[in-house]
Image (cartoon, rainbow, N blue to C red; front, side, top):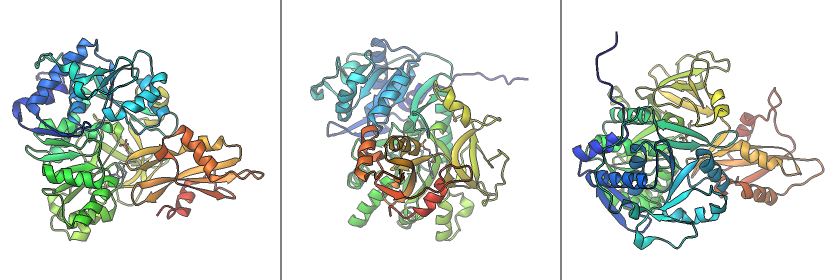
Length: 540
Ligand code: AMP
């Protein structure tokens, strides 16, 4: 027998409408690319989101259209999240750190119709323009006074789009499984793959965040998302914040320790979210100044493993560290490591040990670990296995890419994370390794296989491998290991130049090690495990 309750579709736009009614004075503070600081509220934002939605419709945007953004964290980017999805179109956030080649691929694969761009990234687009789809239109995210001279044909001004439009809107109705957002993530092979979030998954994820971290996600708390809006929806904050009445402080483009310290100090940020690299920068600044930014009480760290020393340093200064794990394909939150109250009495060292784990699952995310044959392994905290997940906030397949989708689901429909982990009896997850051949540097992916394919095109290279080596600042950096052909002597610089032509500069390995022979596994593949052990200290 079915329950007799109404079924109202979950809709992203309802979050901002709710915030405008319930937390109208909740703040959004943004460091702007124009150079100043902008302040607004949820009340005012909801009006501008309505204006923007009307503006988008005036440009002919239809439900299902992909509308791209290339922008930092700021209020206009936030408005786009809501206006685009509100009218049933899809907000496609592009990572500006990708190589030109990858960016072009993504824009054409997504079939973006409009591209909203921050002032900073206009030059990137000008360089790419000749290769971009001819019917793509550009909107520069600024006002008339700051519109740059640009060769981008027909570039439109963001504020002109809002000008004169009504500040109210009746958001259209559509099914809750309609797509709301699109975010591409690097794959081990081939081109980046798109995760297509639905209205339902996005709203459920926001709910899940609010019940999982209620101490931070509550009215009046000031949160700084350093994690970019172009990286899995800034870990869901733009949706969870209006739902809970949190004020958002957007940092714009300056993400160095000094700029972040000053902003946090000035805006009395209580909680700040970002990858370990960002917190290393902030910690240097804290050490230099001999104090914390005023009001700081909490750090959320994820995207890569947080080191013990990072957690310990913040915690010993009275800042709570919440270590979280997730993936683009998971919206992204999977686990978080705020300790349950029964662990309050634990000794400091023991608490830090615990906090180094990736924590426990959030409601709605199921996890299992399995061996190579897919057989479930015990949750004993000792046995590592391939980590699989399932739930309503997890992808069911990549956007328009069956080939990439097929291998990542098992027979029971679970999604393979590409992480190797243990889970203990209390449900604490420990990521111990990665089965996917990727390197994560400063929170951004580098595909080993992409680099290897490029290097293999050098006539003097017989075989090669790219592995991740630990790095204090960037967490990981790529190291290239080359076995030269007998009759050849490829030079480091030649290899660097070859790579620099094809990938973003920060993706080029810092060093090349030449070896007589690469270690092989029993099946004849290069043993990256052996190489990682051999070169573990290389970049330290
Ligand atoms: P992304 O889709 O770019 O957010 O990357 C997700 C991947 O980053 C995960 O599958 C992990 O490999 C890695 N990752 C994210 N958070 C953590 C963490 N707290 N500890 C270790 N690895 C992490």
